[in-house]
Length: 487
Image (cartoon, rainbow, N blue to C red; front, top):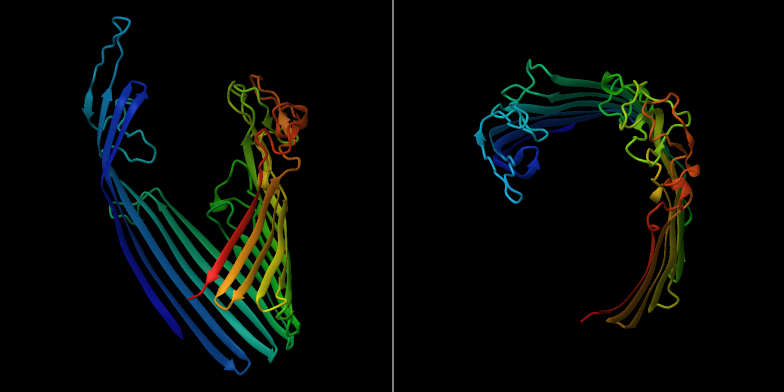
């Protein structure tokens, strides 16, 4: 058995706050705010683990983790001083300024007892706020050694996650205060793992993890999680090592986060990260060796959204859905306001291939060289809500060949040289496929007019591959020469 307890208490204070604005905002030429703020953080956590060797080949272990954090705080705007200005031109080159200095909770611009900068409390009325999190996690694991070379593990996972946020009471805690947002998330899951050694020079391990949560805090947090992993290493000779790995993380949230109905309907969020890698390390002797690596990764994320289309105040088309439908169904559009298009699937996909090769040479003890080449290439895509936007780095290639040499003139003197080339470039057609050209319609027509973006001017599809800016590519040649001297 083992365990620990941790406790943290911290204070932070803003004894004096001063904010002064000088400019022209309506009738206000100068506005000054003063105030103070205070917050604290209390955290207590404990971990406890126990392992029971039931049989020689069978054991049970349990790990319990508890964490509880409170962060109460209060902000207070104590004074507001406003200097107002009125321009009365009795002559061409003169003005009359009427100055009024006010120390009152009333804002003279809005005539309301509120300060005018975002996030501040009512003047002369303290604003209490609170954020807290509590985690209770339990992992119960059974391990069985089938043979000396094969081990199975099965873990049951449970987590209780409570989040509290909102306006706290005068003590800074959540007891009986209205307006508090308490979010409870309960998570259950299991992990099955296998560790196998088919031969002395061959090792394999892998796992499958499945989790489910009944709620989430943010749209990109998963309610369903699947994680698949396998790794193997094979050494047919002492000088040769081959390895490979596969890692697949799948996450889904097919409902509304925190139980709140979205105007877009269910979020239908999905994302995955899939990686395959292979590597060979060959070192037959001290005179030469070869290292080769390849990896492929596919990162993808998508969530239902609505997005704004064209406003009548501009002549540049707006991105649109293929059908031009709107989400939610709006009333007739006010001239000058944007369209709201959807539902659409906001997504990003970044399939990436990476390869490297390096050759180590040492024909004599005094001379050493490394020659290699690295390249990373991305051929991705994403959702566009701006018809002038481009994929950018989602369609790009980065390559870097290199050479480094060293020669020992004598025991304590070594000459070194290194060359690196760095090259990066973006390209390929990109941009929104469908556009809404109706920038002057007084009302929103259902369905909105939609045309291919490449038929309109001022869109990425009708411009060069890199968009209407300078091409985003560069290259660099770096040469370094040095000497190492020991004395």
